Length: 312
Image 1 (cartoon, one colour):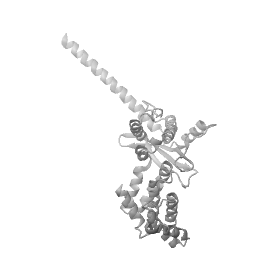
Image 2 (tube, helix red, strand yellow; image 1 turned 30 degrees about the vertical axis):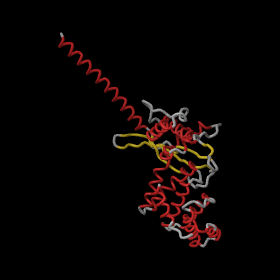
Image 3 (tube, helix red, strand yellow; image 1 turned 120 degrees about the vertical axis):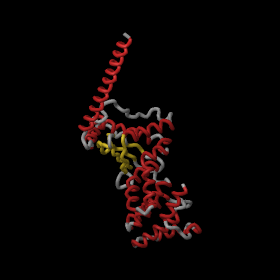
Image 4 (cartoon, one colour; image 1 turned 90 degrees about the vertical axis):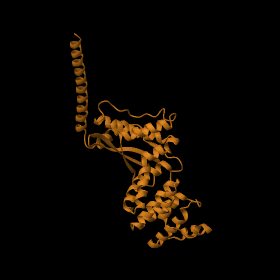
């Protein structure tokens, strides 16, 4: 009798396990089918949903920029597309991040997946538990993660999530938020300049400058450093007009900061570009002369920036 009971129990356990595997297989098959039915580009659906959601309302993804940078910053998911990498399937969200009414000709573009947002959210909740108490984050679903409705709703939720984070000063200026939005890419650009790949440096920095500028404000030393790097790299590539525009923008952001280690080199750099392009430069020469002993011999601008970055 004992042998018979053991056989029955063993058979019952196997049936239960087989049943659980069948459920898991059906679940994975449903997710895979849902993913395969998910359109390649959700831009139109997302935009249509935005129109419906925002009809008669103010845009909740626009907030005032502080720290002396006039205008507003906008977080907007402009595209969502399916990606398959080996056995992994996920949705990649393309976000436009820029200053409304700012001086940039184009917004910054960043690409993130749900797991990137989730990691950021976990880090911030550990570092700022009190400040993050009222911040909503879209949860993971058992089913329906790849439906067009879920992607559209999640896109709106991500915009609102980033907007909320932006309004919390300690979060906005945190390393976690900077790393998520642009810091790694800015460092990539600096590394490209260090290795002499100036074209790649320009592409990377120009894509993320609007994000950095919107988050930190024009007067921040990191923003000035990025503007100087872009000017120096454009000069290396022979793009003198672009180099001058970035140099003048950097000087404008520095205002009357005579203590900056970059100022002397930047003034010499800008005066030289004006001379090459036959532009008026007397106002720059007067500014350099007003520095007195600080206006002596200058290093190449790119060298100063790279040296400063290594010191940090």
